[in-house]
Image: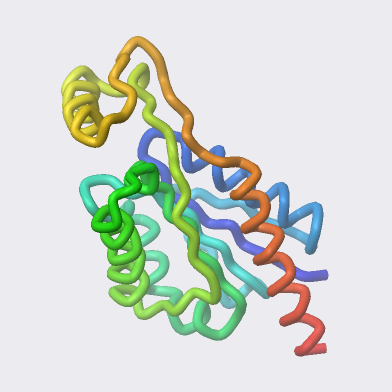
Length: 184
């Protein structure tokens, strides 16, 4: 049976939800899936047939736990099917410059770790005003206001396109199935 690792890092909790949806889709399609928070465990990529990593962008970068893990496991990651999902609110901006920056952030992360994922995808995350400290809520409101986003801090906003996310996981599942058939 194919073993898959879905490793994630989260700051406010939404990427946990994203990683769970990815793992559930892959589990239904491909095989045995381990869902692991990079901040609490450090599995070895070489113990898996395929790896999907999800992390969220904060202040222009990803969580240190996932960055350190990817750097340490880059040789094994480059030797099997892998995917990276970037959870980022900038995806919502239609400005071509913002879209270029999203791609550049992903490229800077993966190349900085020495990792060449088979697939990457940027998806919109969530604006969790009700979970934020007052200073983070104030900061996020200012940032979001500039891009014309939701600024009512009395509620949370979830922007993830779950259908798009499941489609991406299914596409990665097809890559895994093709790869494991080729090896067999």
